[in-house]
Picture 1 (cartoon, rainbow, N blue to C red):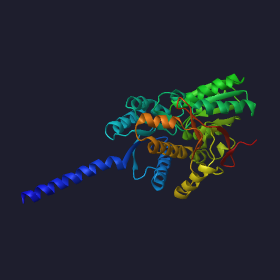
Picture 2 (picture 1 turned 180 degrees about the vertical axis):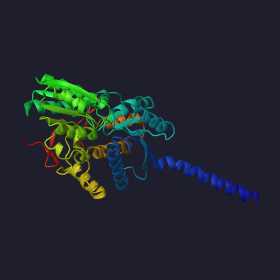
Picture 3 (picture 1 turned 120 degrees about the horizontal axis):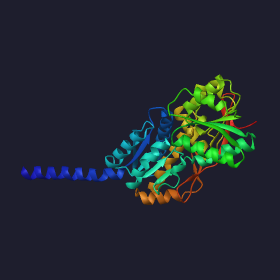
Picture 4 (picture 1 turned 30 degrees about the vertical axis):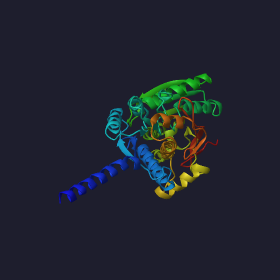
Length: 372
């Protein structure tokens, strides 16, 4: 009886050891730190939809053979402190080797040193602050730096619209500051003049005082550098004040929710954005857009497609070189002309992503390529 019991116990222990040994091989944990609630939750939720689409495609294509990726989501609420808490938990408790996030540049700047110190890949689908360029061998992003977006808009405003005087209203965080600095720098180089600059705190809803000061400088255009909610409200208040100016915006102006909030006030607004057209795109862009629309009943925006690409690139790196962060970073850095859901993606030696920019406008309640 003792012999039978001992054999049973040994068998159970063997099975337990076998299962515990197999689990790490069958499941790969990836973190995701996104603004799932708060002022820019629409961006975080879009990223989550893109990541979930990528997980489905990774599984169905058996990119990793029999192994599966499990994504651990944490909400940073677009707040640096919450992001720091999330990354510390994901690294020490969840033991992730790669993290997708954050979206807000201020959060990404706060968590990047922790990721680098612990040799964890940090891959942002939405942070554009120039401060992030070349910041770490472990940091990547699929959203280009503000340098490219703001410079492209400045060149268009000066060269195509022939506007000489611009006022700027920007959100006072790393995202807004980066856009304001780069637009002002490039516009001045081209002979333009930034006649007035005003800022506001993230989450603000009344911009009448700032707009009054900007209007006093007699600008031909007002450049709104912020997130979609704030730009929508500022757009309405510009039109309510009957200011006869061209409204300019950053890439976040192209979020569908802005049109719902701003209504007809947004008509004619012009903004620059990384080149992306889910409706008329081809190749991987069109394939993803069609699949996404079939699942969610809407076309994907840039956050959805950028997050999809971040997840797929991480998975491809794991498939090729395993989960060692140094080897993963080397593989990602070597990608050039990768055909992704967000378009053509290339990385430079400093890990910076390169994408062409395009100029869009609001016309008849839709986002379209600029046409005079």
